[in-house]
Length: 82
Image 1 (cartoon, rainbow, N blue to C red):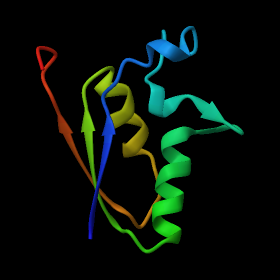
Image 2 (image 1 turned 90 degrees about the vertical axis):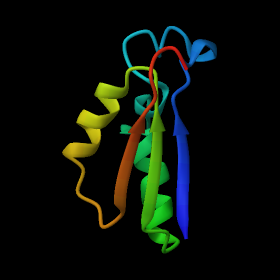
Image 3 (image 1 turned 60 degrees about the horizontal axis):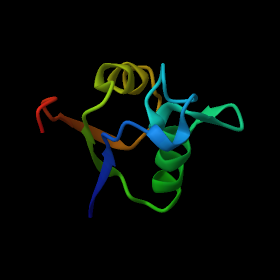
Image 4 (image 1 turned 180 degrees about the vertical axis):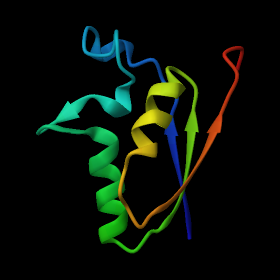
């Protein structure tokens, strides 16, 4: 089963936490929210993930490149005019 994560919002309700980082990278217990979600997916044998990006997409992609996980992650970056 393929999982689709929407990670493109601006996170305006979390300001000022999201002024310099995207909402999926806001830390919760010293780990970004996206890390917690990916760990949960791994624990539940969901290993095929598509992440849809928009706002501050490059920061999320950078985070994902250094991540050690057996989850197969694919990203799609939407244009800013979406």
